[in-house]
Length: 191
Length: 333
Image (cartoon, rainbow over all chains, first blue to last red; front, side, top):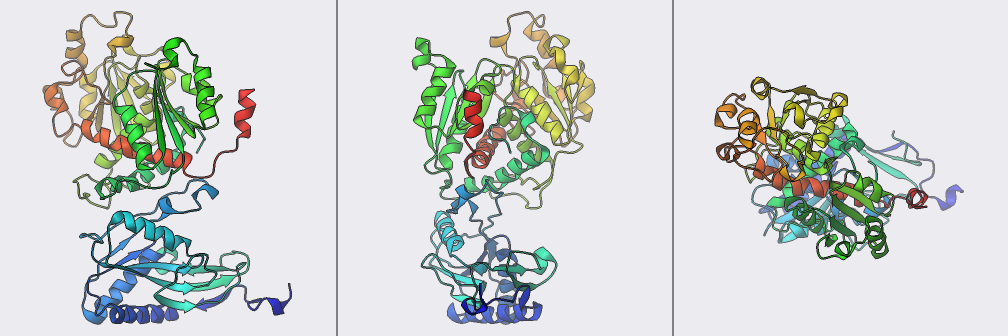
């Protein structure tokens, strides 16, 4: 494949965001959430395991710093609602942890690390539907890498990252991986 | 994990922990407004019951339905079995109907194993004769872990404690008491609990122990009273009078005096110890009513945990890629 037809060739292992940039992106998203939800009233942050969960916690902490507001924060496992279950051996489940009070009538902000096909978010919307009836659902992601297969978009994006479908985006977070970084590679190799 | 669940010995420690951890996640479902997941939509689970059963059949049925599978109940009474149809012919009928899983309870030891060679779907042993009952062992292990291996999550909204994910039952002492000879629950529990690291002791009269018990991964005692003070778990077995063709003990009263769990014996247990029974109970024989109804008894909890554990097993066997049919064909021919 020649470089001309592949606008992102030759950036194997490239660091897209470093720890400082991740911090700034989350700070901006936290401000955007406060703006868009009129001060974060009745907002719940639900992280999608694995790495959406620490991101949701960080956003909640940021919002707490800015406004002194305690935003309830939880996790939403979507495994049982995925549309690709039959393509893999059965996988272990993540945790679903709703804040006390549930989701009814609240503005739920789903938080995930990478937005790609949109199928995980669809599964999350289905899972949420069985847990109650939120007033509204929004989506925050650290990286939007394009290639959507469903009519889904993010309300808050840390970084828009044009990719080719062969590439793999790795998000590493301190809570899970002992470091903060977003990198891109050609063949799925960990950086 | 293997494709079938015939014996507790089929499960490695990693398999067993995966089932318990999955069950732990699924336990939250009971607290939610919609107690249903779409995961097994379009899959068919057949409950094939040749023996009477209340809780196991209902438990499997509830578990399959909560995962949105279609459930077909088949009991030997009122079916072609009453007209003399063989297990194999029944199996081929189910096969033709496209069962993705067959849950079988049968009076003959080894029936589940035979069935596994005849059907394409997964076979789940729900009790075969005096051989095994692996899902009972799993739900018992789940109950023990929730009660005795502290979790980080604290009590759930319904007041249940949460088991520690990834933890085994290492170092816990479990005493299984009574009719081991006729008990499929005992065999499955000995195998599974020892896989999970528990130290299992069987306490029973010599006449109610199988010959091969020496090869089981457990110790044997004829004296219940000496085992009680060092037990974390006491599991009482039902005296299975329907399977007893001989005189195994002089009288029910004598059995009850030596091996029955009454309040005086319960008082000899350590403070934290729990009392389990797979049900149905013979109150006044192997367990006194006041013990069965005490706070240490987990008997009702075991039933609730049964649904959760069976959901975990069904999900892990049926929720992913279908197993290749080649291995099935080789056996069928």
